[in-house]
Image (cartoon, rainbow, N blue to C red; front, side):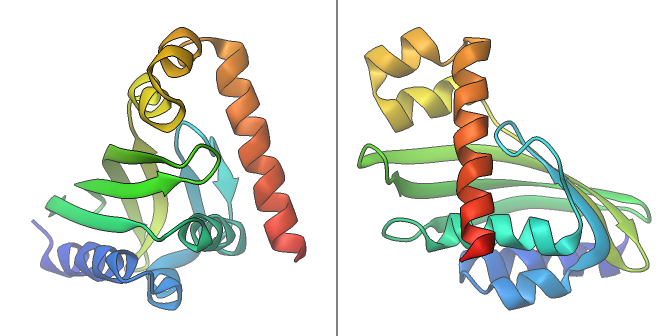
Amino acid sequence: MNDRHVALLTTFFEAFSKSDTDAMERCYHPDVSFGDPVFQELEGRDKVMAMWRLMLSRGDGTDVAYRAITADDFTGSAGWTARYTFTSTGREVVNEVEAFFRFDDGLIVRHHDDFDFRQWSRMALGRPAGLLLGWTPMFRKTIRDRAQQALTEFQLS
């Protein structure tokens, strides 16, 4: 157990739960990379933080709760839950996420979130659409393309 890395992840999630993106950013290495089922790979702190700012600026806000933070000298993990309204449909989403981290120079240099895309799509889109489309590669590509477009537009504004 590395107490300094546990404290870093705790600081990150405390900031996340308060939508304090400036404090979140201070936890990331300049060369951080991020990946999840929607934003597959983002490189660099500016792009990763643009994604978090975009996500936290949407809807009525996001409620974040975290749990089970562990870390050693090189890697860490945590579970977190996001509760929010999916703006496109107005549907409530409770997304259970497992996060994995790597550290360099006392900061997060790699952050990967994993969640059940099919379950997320059922909540975000509703049972029929999410159930029928949530598993298809074409649907996933559509969601990813829309997310990338939203991120690009957000960065330009």
